[in-house]
Length: 308
View 1 (cartoon, rainbow, N blue to C red):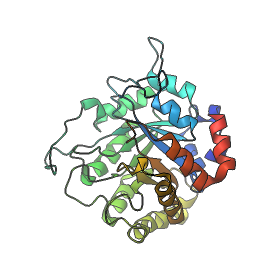
View 2: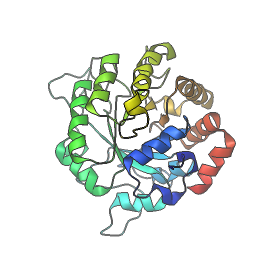
View 3: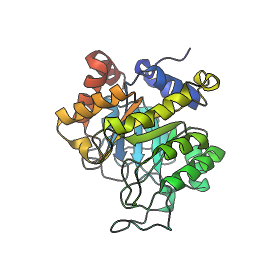
View 4: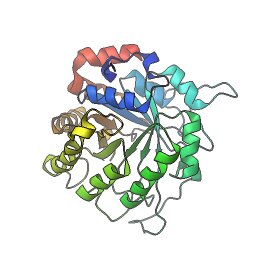
């Protein structure tokens, strides 16, 4: 029997199969936090990486942004000369460690200036294989601002990832990524499910214009209906988790706003709540703590912090 992620000890996070991790997330009933940190930024707190800080405040999933799989580095994390930074991070935190990979569509124009990102950050067969070799637990197929990432390319990348990467595959945009298209539609949700995504990320309520709880509810119902199918419900390889993304710099808003977004997301049925990296490349530790207390209470929040 798989334990809830709420109850995992640090050693439980080491070398865990994707389906088992997904089952543990689902069993936690909306009380899982993902914290994003820019791994290429200098450490804000001396010789301690942002990932370590965020895990210590209760994040059970660490998401490394701007991580280049061809030149892997996590600023602020001491590593031995031949040691993988991912392995070094896993040894120091009790958390699942994932990375953003970006399915760039060079045929579309961005709203304004366009950022060109390194090949090691793009979603390709080579980067999926490199992520697998590094021991990454999950990839999130998404787009940073101004990066030309489209939902069509995300769907194609899900299929490509499944050929080369055996961890969890999450997919979805937190915002426009600079492209003039809806952040996500019902058709996109269904396409991501059909492509084989393990989890679908949607904007958390109130973080993107037009994505109110009333608009998000039908999108989440598509996923809930899929999970309720008899052939899917007890097969955690096929089940799809939902991630509420607070990634439009409101992750560093006042704590009352953090709690409001968090409680609305939990009421909608999201399995995981994401806190973005707008505090100088770090997920605000105070936001993680406030969100944790709001959605899981001090009992679980303090226990998780103590274990990390």
